[in-house]
Length: 369
Image 1 (cartoon, rainbow, N blue to C red):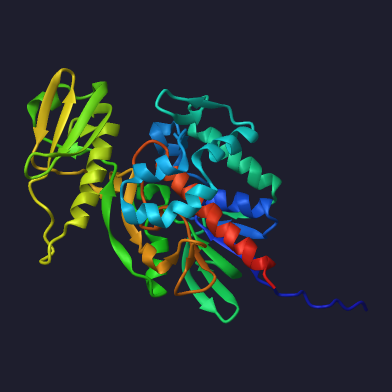
Image 2 (cartoon, rainbow, N blue to C red; image 1 turned 90 degrees about the horizontal axis):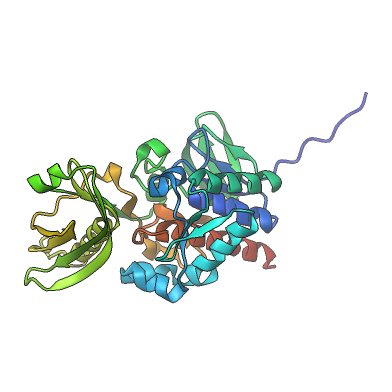
């Protein structure tokens, strides 16, 4: 009778929780650096939210320098936190990376990059091919229920099984568009492990108005629109030129989205001691030969937002590694963190750059004696 030695039990080097933009990019970098990893994704396929970006066209980067990118973020604490990651993985490098994978790209006059066929599926398929060639295991339809530290790694629990991982990268996204799988799992894991969460707010979302002029124009798009944000004294504190769409609920489009995001950050920085926000903010929107003023700023619901503002507090994450300062071996990337940018490819670039930073840090740690 032949006897067999027992199978060795060993952890996977890296478990990536979430198969969106950050998770796919992280797995691709791990495969390139020969770091054994796997992806656990709660939905049936990878990249559900990526497939929705830019109305399914996927504006994945912009033709600007790292310094211009960081300046455009506007929010200082976010720019400082992601600066190193963005400089190591700048937007133009991301474009060249996709081109090297055979993705034909299209550059718009304002510098935004799309796949040439303007199909987000082209980007997701490029990741799929890369992960297939790198033999990265993908476990879909698999929601992670808990991440628990061990003496020598982590226990990653699901409904049907658990696995042992040396390192965990949480890349579960924000909480907007929950049907894509972004339901706050990663933030709950972080909170359970002692991390603070910055309260959620909608970012890059339309503004509601009852103005009958907008209702009459519902369905119309104005490419040459513009918005201004005015403070209580009437001073212009932000302006942006871009498209404005008239909707049944009010106004949307890039010019409106970026104005709304600016207001959220502006008010957050000016919360008073009693918890009240700054007052007197107004938006002037110019389109179709007319200018209208919105004195009451009512954004659409968070579940409809392009990006979630808030999330895991970056003060508890090392910007040089994307590793938790509280739990060694636990990393975060993308929208699960309290980081965000304007519309125009910024948020995908943030996801890619922070994911690369996390995996590069793990690779460096593996080489350290």
